[in-house]
Image (cartoon, rainbow, N blue to C red; front, side):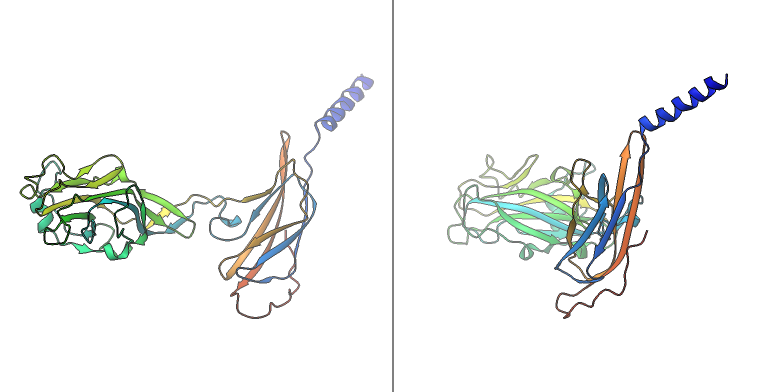
Length: 329
């Protein structure tokens, strides 16, 4: 009986050895100075042995302290789109305007010319890059413009309108004017990056024409499809007026970007790096963290090394030497 017990214990110990225990990663990190300059690469020197290494700079979106918690950040609201001017010589092609008081008189939500003319509109087309000469199939990016200030508050909607106008008093105005708005997007701009708020399909775009002015251009009216707004008219020498109306749009003060994530700098099959380089773009105080990870089907162990860095303006002069800053567990 005694021999049997000893044999069973031996087999269990042997089985445990064969499975193998997950060892704690060995990870050492040093840096030449705890005060560094924004825009200048910082070298972190690594030693030890770890199957995997994850890096957190301490910047927004890459902060070890925020790895489990959602990051809710303030956002600015921006518009971007592109324009194709394939014909026409009229100035001010499809100027963009906004309103905070547009009302729809139709219970079905279809705007009328009277609705549009009763609203107060503010022209913001000067904020965007517009085409100056017709170039078929040439997309002119309008830029990305912050429109946050045009929202009254979080409850009052904002409406947008592209105004299509052919003025017969302008030289060459009789020529057929084709203006194509594509890639329209409303984004939330955050310190972490961009988040789409309204895609083209979310904007409820409607084309509204002045029926009287289009009485001689019934077969060539402004049109909306799933991806673009097309301002057009027939080749006639009369005034044309039309509007592309979108909205309502609501101000989104913040977005949830989810937990911060690490930057992987070593995978299981990679050799142990001697160093890692990172550049901080903005001055400030950052807690930089390296996480050494050993993991297998039998478990996972981590070694965490963190240090506080001060990032100063690039033109502040010489960098002070480190003041005994050691990496802490």
